Length: 128
Image 1 (cartoon, rainbow, N blue to C red):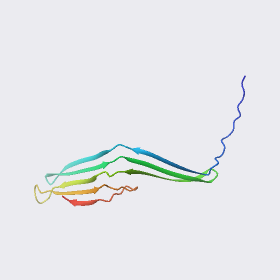
Image 2 (cartoon, rainbow, N blue to C red; image 1 turned 30 degrees about the vertical axis):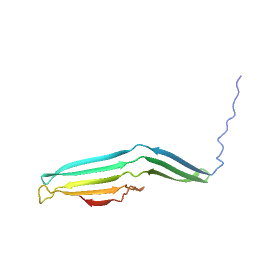
Image 3 (cartoon, one colour; image 1 turned 90 degrees about the vertical axis):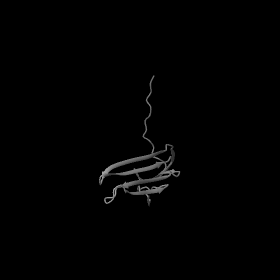
Image 4 (cartoon, helix red, strand yellow; image 1 turned 120 degrees about the vertical axis):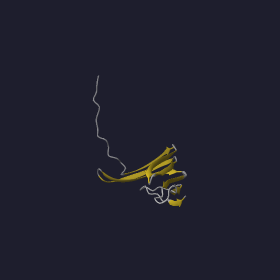
């Protein structure tokens, strides 16, 4: 014996808006380091960089509102909250064109760099 089931379309949502809150973790820590050297004025110029990356908590909040039938507007914000990561910086050694074995050394460092959403970073420059 068989019977036919009644089929219906999904009901329209009773709510016109929504809010989502998500929390996660980024536990991995590492330091990215690079080093380059090249000949300049018959000597060797070098550039080294380091950037510590700390783990942290990932927070995401979004929301939206239905404005007309099947049209909705929404906005979201995601952020990573991290502990201080230490000094990030660049160190360069550039040979002097007038004097042999007297390179100019320069270190550009940022203690606990604070990054913004557009990727900018405020750094301070020090001479070695």
